Image (cartoon, rainbow, N blue to C red; front, side, top):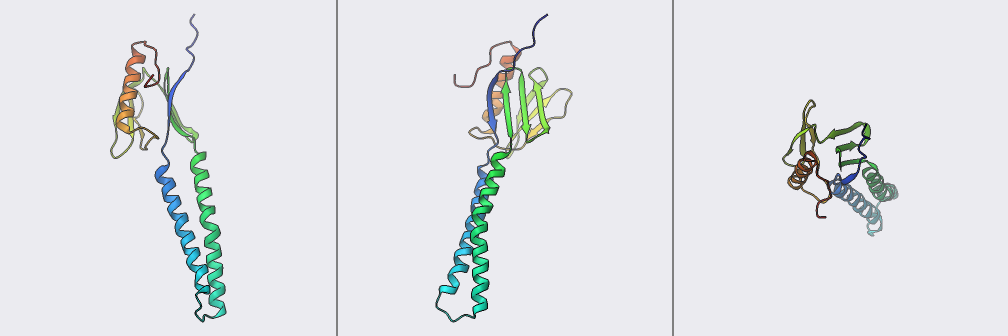
Length: 167
């Protein structure tokens, strides 16, 4: 009786968060700019009522604190997500944050890989609905990832040893 093959990680790809991080940075910058404007208005030398100055300081102070806080909370949420595609000697593992959203496919189950436009890949497997990953991965474009996955699948089905690309 043969022992089950041990799973060996070949490579893994995290979802690219640069676009979402840039939007968070822009929102935080906008809040800080609003804060500078609101805090600077009372210092302008114009004769404004005291109530106007107090409201301006309250709005400016709130925006000054909320901008960086929003950025830190947003980045923490983005970086805490466990969303990745793992390539192993036995197949693929897709993890999308929760255990309910994770899926594993053996190389024998996979029929083909396709590139989705404008971004992402589709994994077509026998006996299952196509797995559509509509996201960009860090450091690799969809076309290149499809080529690599196709090559890994081909090698695995021929019984060849899988090794990371470029080694």
